[in-house]
Structures are given as structure tokens and as C-alpha cells.
Image (cartoon, rainbow, N blue to C red; front, top):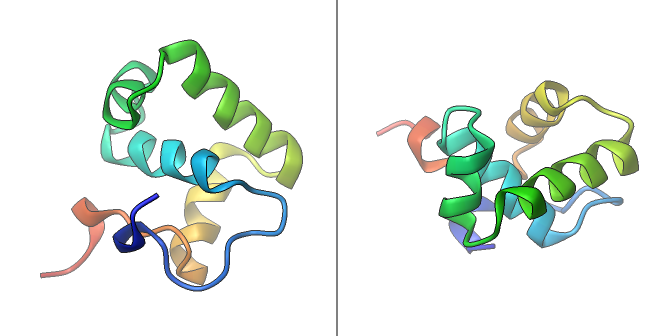
Length: 82
């Protein structure tokens, strides 16, 4: 994961790769296949990373995005001001 996409601490139960796929998912507008292409993985791998992240945290994808943005550990260039 590039440093531009990460501020603060990683969630305790998440890997950097899972968060990289989550950021790519947000940048891709919620498309798993586009997120996979952005992250350089197969769509099935992107789905697995997202599912594992949801299972580890107990949050939905939407909740992960909201919490990540609010706490500052999920930075998505397309959503950043300026």
C-alpha cells in the first residue's frame, strides 16, 4: 500500500494488502473487477481480500470505508480535497 493511502495506524485485524484492495474498490466506484485491475490481482482475490477484511473486523464494506475515512487510515486520492 502506498503511503498516500494510509494515515495513522492500520486497523488491528487488517493487512496492508486488504486495505490496498479496499482503497482500490473505493477508487473503482464499488466495482470488484475494476478494483482488482487497479490492485493488480484477480477479481476472485480481490473478493477474498474484502471478505477476509469484513470477517476480521465484523464490519460491512460500507462501514469499513466510513470508519477508515473517519479515522484517517483509508486515504483515497479521488476523495481527497484539492
